[in-house]
Length: 174
Image (cartoon, rainbow, N blue to C red; front, side):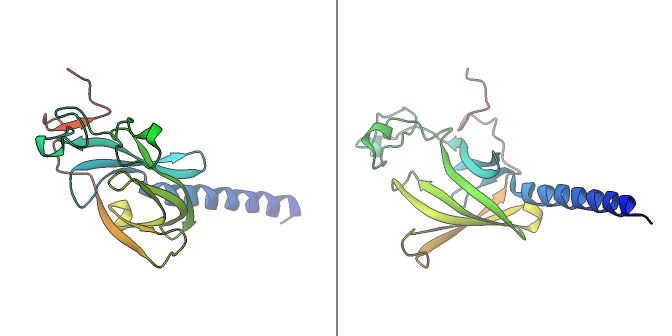
């Protein structure tokens, strides 16, 4: 075998491993239910990184008991944000997971997780398990990475998002 053939085989093998690696990294892309089952989160590719946004919220309106946080009957806003200018942005459609790198073996690191429930941003990592059917998302204090919390999300299935209680970015408004 001459050098040209060896080089061609090497390039082919490299291309094959790169595409397998990209497919492996994209296994987490999809829609998930967090433990509260009150929203749907979509993990997507944002450039070379991975991000996440809220694409559905169940019962997306302030209730009477929450009138100190927002106008009753209106969609939830980012009212806990530390930046007063962002407190009027809707939670629905918000990108709150950003900048994650795929590092191999189902692990994504070096990203940020914004929690609209407390208005704080955390450092984080998530791990794709069970062929992408489950994500373990861990948020930690950026200055003390050993202090944090892990949530397990499951791939969306068996939930009827056409029900009126679900407000979704991809549903046409009536």
